[in-house]
Length: 104
Image (cartoon, rainbow, N blue to C red; front, side, top):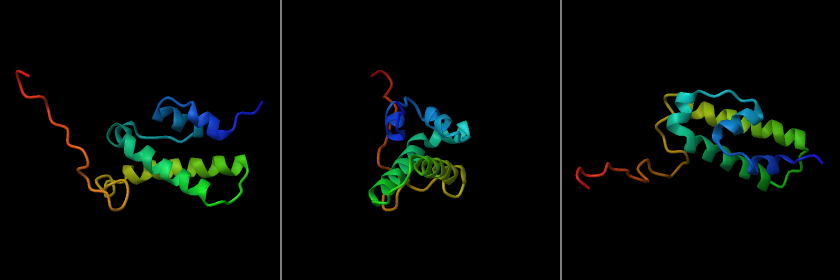
């Protein structure tokens, strides 16, 4: 039985596995800082592709997903883009993480 691409992605455990699955190289420094943004941008593009209603073969789907993943990584690897929010209209400070006060 051939496993469909969507089924394969549902079983992936980490971002690096997604990159390995598609044969896309990545910079570990970019992923250390922008992991969630890269994956979110990739996910939004995949969702956009899938909701367009355009029929595509699994081979075409694979090529498009691969390109979307590479583009998402490249976006955050570019120093001029790496500080912008992952999506237009979202602010940069959505969550603030503070250190625990000493003695707490």
